[in-house]
Image 1 (cartoon, rainbow, N blue to C red):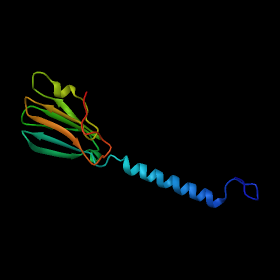
Image 2: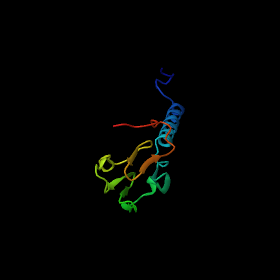
Image 3: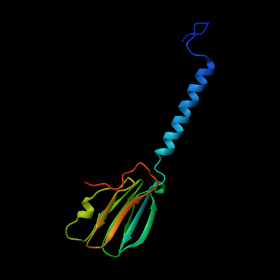
Image 4: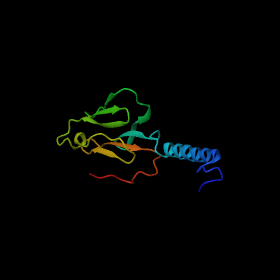
Length: 126
């Protein structure tokens, strides 16, 4: 609607729209941040390592006593190698999202990504 001067929006309207857009952007950043993602490396039901994936700056490897090597990268964790016969754990690939996990059953070793992501599914397959 036009006002008496023939303008569509007043300066106050533009400020209100800008404030709403700024608030929406801040809420989006808060809900989509990945800061809560934590990787846990579990062997025989005991948590051996807990890694905050958002704090990893350089890739590194963790060699476990049972013949498994776990690779850690910024935002990802995965089985790099294992001396098990079928190598299913290695073929699982990179774990990057809350709810993902991979297991090496012969060595009773599990990697899982946990966190505060309320939009993440309870489990992932495939």
